[in-house]
Length: 314
Image 1 (tube, rainbow, N blue to C red):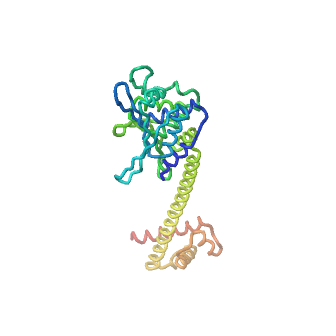
Image 2: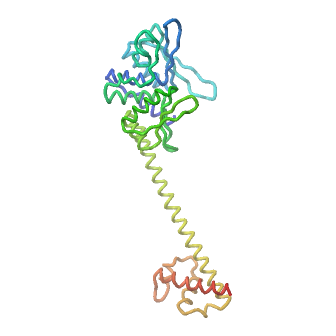
Image 3: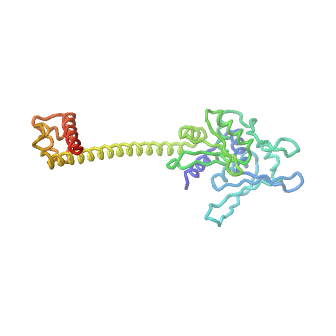
């Protein structure tokens, strides 16, 4: 199961005794996953479709608990491309679909069929209702990427005005979500891990939040280890290349003017380097008598390199 589906299953299990919050959550869920069907003169059906049975059960419960509507859940089996089954709830005109749609702030009240394309502010009685509405929007048309791959949380709607209204609602809580047009849909999205974490906390997805934070910590540790390994590898390569160059310089001097022609202090370090090609500068200095520091060894080897380069130029 994907991280997005696990998050939705967690959110679908959240229950509340606050009728206002339940209606706000159902309103957002229906807005993003429902469709209205005209079945006759002034007759409407409401069809709600989801790929998760946990969400279907939640919609069923909220309809019965808050509106006294007993509907059924049917399963559509998808044979193409091994896609998941979809769960469909149908509220017919006889069940009171028209009144339900208007109570949820999707159509204007009255006898007409005029859509309301903004977040129904009259349903958002308090902060808890706002959190419930955003949770319903995520259940109806949201998704979140696996944090092991990237950080991305989004809400998909086919109405630009509603997308802007939802964006403003979320941003009023201190977020910075944006909108992008994808095919024929408007996508309200967040990409920063900290903001996604905060929004998961607000809508009640605490297990998903912990999972995201754990993944983030593991990724940070892995990146730190890789940085350390890369740094050590680079330093090791640099040390090895320097040692090879030093040995080549000494051998060149040996084949031309001879090591014994060098000053005594350079003779000493040259002979030790030839005998111990794999030692570091610090280790070379400790072998000498008397021992010298790393900078002293480096200074002598640089002198040898200058002599070798002068011989090559001649």
